[in-house]
Length: 197
Image (tube, rainbow, N blue to C red):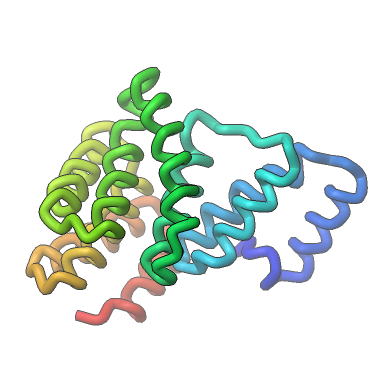
């Protein structure tokens, strides 16, 4: 588990990369640290990685991946804090993903739909969010992004659970099976321990 700030060896590698001006390694650690922190629900750490990556001035978009996880992390923080600064940051990520979605729909359509669902949820637009979550799950499945389909199902499950919608059970079950198919047993275990059904 990368989670810099929680692992001294990883933190040491990152500090050495920064000292040696190895921007490529530092950015890689910030990118994948953000992804991993988001997947395991440490949203504060995820946005910390995203912000540090932006501060380097050598940001790499990775064809939507960085904007996707940045946006998800910002929106998760918006849910937790109700601070509008996270909505503004997420809007920038959504705009970038929208551009990538036009260039490569099969790679980014589900990313855009999930970010839109999360934004609708953060804004209290329940019906719109419900539709977008289902569309995001379908698009990720159609385009065979197993891990992002798992994430979309998990986010949909959490949304439906907050709104006492019975679809939460289906989406949690689907998320677990997809994370397992992806090889993320630890994430499955984490889900099983945290689900409040």
